[in-house]
Image 1 (cartoon, rainbow, N blue to C red):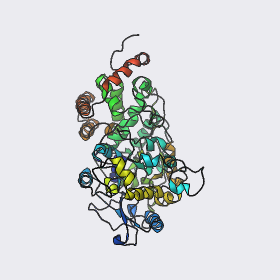
Image 2: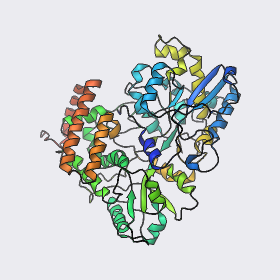
Image 3: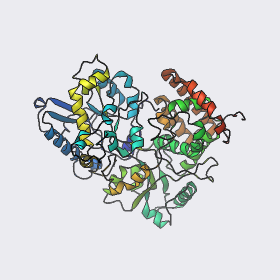
Length: 538
């Protein structure tokens, strides 16, 4: 399973790349929607909603101030006059979380990347949500329609089950409510494509041919047009996972060693951290693994058509001024582009095209998988059970806490389709994860992408922060010709060796169980070509 991360995965990159409005660093309480004073309320629930829905803010400086969350909160408070919901803005850094959670002063509801949560679950800082998700949503039940999602289980309300249920922590419990979704796509200048006679590519070879033609194109001032705008974060995260999936998918029957009965129906074939660690010890993901070499070779091929400086944050300007023909970023970019009245060109969205056997002999022929997922990830902190004895076990505190009951009721309330639509669909940025809430038309391409099979693994969330940072630094050096492939693979293998050793020491997985499964799958692997180690002939 992935472990702690310092940054939100897709959202952090998104915030850098699309100039999203970011709340102030200090904690504030003036974004709330209630008109009641705190002293009039029995329950004052503090809600760190995250960047997307803060009342009275203007994402991208476009449109009217956001009111959706404020209106839903007012409806909830009208229903429960003893409760006040305070919307907070808080720093999105781990140091803040550790300080506040450790002291019991954190907001009752946090928006935290769940991989950051997993590393702390044993500390009692977060409340597992399974007992509530496995029961009916009472607001659905009171409507009296047994056919509605949520009538039997709250879980049933969530559209993207693979991603929502796949957020279970290493202890098997769910601490995350996946409120909405984000996905990446390649935004392209349709006007330029039409001018150059280009069609949206469906294969990797077509994609390269499109970029070749764009690269040969000269603007009116004689300057080149960059085919694809992308930064090092996308190479380190999204590209690694997509290319890995394309080249390793056919091996899964022989290397997917663990099938979690809870997650397998939703994350078919997913490789967890212990599997990756075990496989690395068997020679995979090393210089002698031809598929692993191919991942990075194909990445360098893509780099030839991108901006030279991969560390720049100003890619949006390059796209809107038409110095770049395409930009690879996430769904909130749609709102930015749709609100630009002086854009001067039509735009569209497509997904990264798939590899073929022409691309690589290891290509599976599968469509590029989903690498997006949960955007706003809501967790309940130990502050929600502050009305109970902290010396009691978590389950007892959960059963006794009246405050927690009201916190859960609020989360259930914002999951009602009519309420969720007010919040998520107030402007086109993220996709609803509640059945019955329609995706806004401008985001429909991303909804189609999210219907694909989920990725084989998430590499930068598999090991520790040190591993991911070293990979990114060395990858940037490799992609900009500061080091050759063999040099990069040498660094990467050392990086993986250290990360695996650290992980095995800290988490102590059952490697014997993996070895037994490895031996059982030997006949399957015997039919596979170019594995990084010699398999016994059976």
